[in-house]
Length: 335
Image (tube, rainbow, N blue to C red; front, side):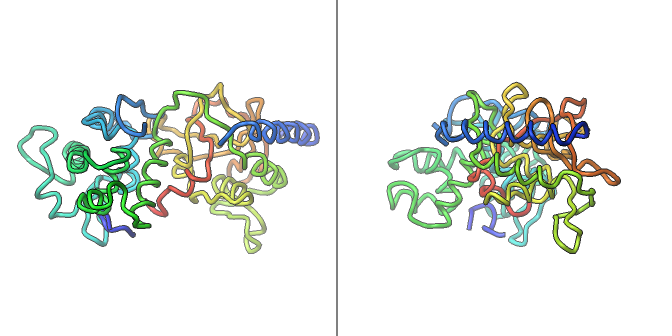
């Protein structure tokens, strides 16, 4: 169990378009085949909109509290714990956006906004408290061999004594999985500083989606036989990547966290592209498609339409995710 919370929990010329996509598919295989597929510390920029605007400045500020953490890592913890929900409450009685259990809050909660009250339900207190607690744990295990950030996360999950006893991350499967999960998730909240490597599964995902062109849209559709093989937008992207062994969450706003985020001018075929009416908050994403190059995606757009090619350069374009297998595995099953 963690310290804070129990571990629980296109439309134009389809024939020509198909050939165009196949050329891109081959290109992705060639590029992916030629590219091989310090966590904490320093100032790390957050990916566009990955943290809800209401909390972005808090995460950026407090994520630099000590060298063992950074804003992306802190964001990953908050997302994993609550999905940025300040009213979250778990069966283990963990509370708030950072999922503190009452006993831990009593000893480690801080008055982050200086109003004289330590309120676990107030992100202005809970987010600073999460960062402060991380840094406190890091200080307990600062002399342990290994990566300070990984040791801090291990202490968060298994306790500082276990890290000291084993001289680093202890040999507990749950703890090692927790460390890998948070450090992997952090990559999806950090603004990339170099070009992001292409996914080796991208071409297969495009091929799957391409075969579904012309299929009628169905809200909630997962492509099952009882649904007539129909999809909605995130059902299509989920099935496309599932066909190449990558399991994505069901809904679009969680799919956004399945890997790092290339800029618009860095998009490659196979990237997921997202759309929202709120360009400051990934939790508000309402649509997703699979980029195929040339400014187009394959998507299941809406009721009454069919799976088709659509342009991505619209006012509601939010951003993109380059799906990675580890990134998808790191996502919580529910937030």
